[in-house]
Picture 1: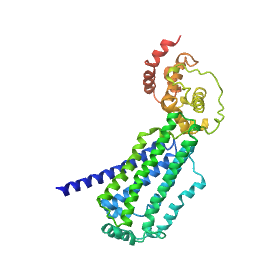
Picture 2: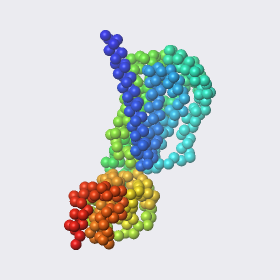
Picture 3: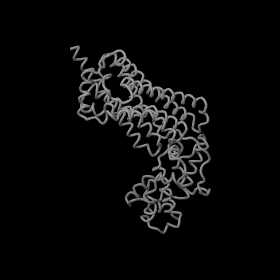
Picture 4: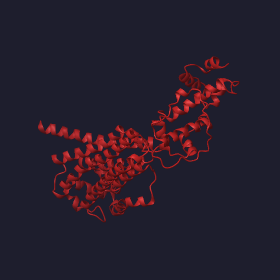
Length: 413
């Protein structure tokens, strides 16, 4: 009975670990899909989570599932990616703190160890796949023979393991030091509301601590396995791997707890570009539907919000059904994540709702106060960029509480 309970517990732990890995991969891919255009730094964070999860999946397949074909496919071949983990987390944090998205040419040097590793595993990678399956069959049967197998042209298996963990550990501690430095020296120079700045720093710090929580137990596991001949399946190592998995789970959950990281940490980069727009009094009728710009927000983002509003009032891009955020970014010359920040935290609405508010306001004016009063209602809806008559009528009634015909009859003199 005791053996059965222990077996059931081991099975539960295996499935939990696999669930954490799959969950992390899904969160990373969702983050990339929905946020890459808004904040391209999310690519660095996504790659970090994907590569870290791939490392865990490889360990799971080789030691728990022990599937020979999958093990031969995963083992060794992706080790260059694991050496990129440290640079990815460092560059993500650095770019977030500096509000930049591009990498410089010199940043490529961070990935030099990964490039060297890629060259070092070429001889093994080119071996016959059946031979690799034979090697993995022997390795799964006797994990202690790992030091006797030649996987790498430059480094021993033991050095390889320590190099991966050591490099990530150095980068994580360096990144944590960078965050502390920015917090101490530049916190009050960042043009964001205090609470948002504080929360962003909490997220970046938490991410490093989650990495350390996941990495440190795994380091002890490797030490026990490689230097003291410990069993992969001992209770001690099971506990270490469970703690390591919890750190990975916290990384994924952190993305849900700190959703504002989707916008990065936008900061003033200098004066706004010349927009070529003339200052004029707004003529929007239903102003109550547009959120006021709170004076407590930093001046730069007030200026960005005013530029957005001015652009909508004067250029009226919302009248085109194909008008997109990307077009506005080009027209205004303002980074997209700065604009997204304004919609989220200043206008308190999304781009599509903001665009629709302006569209309805324009229709209200066109129905009763402009030279379009001689136009049919359907023609006005078409000029406003509505894709169909039914969509126009339904949307207008939702926002005004009456049909376009009733609105015109009530307000048209």
